[in-house]
Length: 385
Ligand SMILES: [Fe+2]
Image (tube, rainbow, N blue to C red):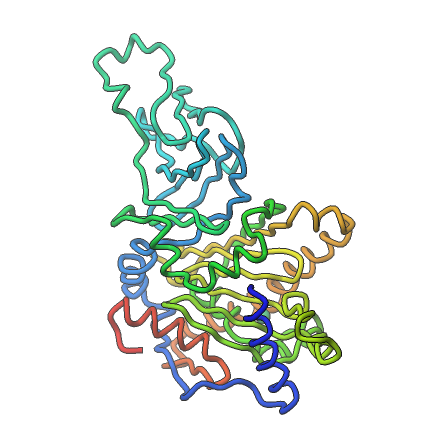
């Protein structure tokens, strides 16, 4: 985040810390409970939002070198994101042109992507490189053979893919849609962060509840009272919107230290948590000295289940500066808090909604990011919020 932006946001937050009042938007809002429980609604979300919109699926640090690849399960397709020898990233459908097997799993590095079934090999750009016993495939168009390609773009350390393959995507479009958040990602050297660890969660809740949990700090002082809550000024954040993406800055208790410093020395990043809702299904978090991403996808056909991925990315210099124990503690605190507190509460929400006890969920004026997220969804899914 550029320094001028940090100063502007920090001033606003300090004013609110002083007055004790949260930042509020104009009006309360609400969303139908069926948006979380209805299979037809999920089908519409998938067809109109999760499939056709670009999704932030990886960071540059997932595929740092020529030959690096990472597999992503996206709505409708398993996808291999791979970097070629010229440094360009490609997104190929992870389905061998021979007999349809998944070509690679998880992540790795190699000159070729090798299908385990019959060892057909592909280049990082998805073109076919080799067929064992090629004579048996005389007449097969090996030169024209390529894994199906999806639109992909890499901007400021973030990699975006259109899961259903429709339309086109390039860096200009991603830059336009991210607006000022591109500067934020560049200012923290997102592209230089290395992938550190992943954990996958299979959850009995609607995919939107995973996003919802990051979109307001109102719950910090209650749900997280005994964990991370005490580090923050509860119920206070700034909200900036660009298109359907949102940035919220949650002030840590330490923000008041800024009052003792000249503005030129103000560093908001180390005294806050910065959360980006990268519409529709990714949450990108700057936690002082690391990046944390949450990617979520629904289980097809089941609005009550989803799969979420947590990933930590750490700059090699930060990694060196701190002990292994420090990073392990942060990992455990993050996983423990979200699993035991957020996701446990959200599973209760899902069960209540599924049982039909509530018609609507309400968003306060102190929860504007929730309103933005759900209005953006409603506008695209084609329903009044
Ligand atoms: Fe939370």
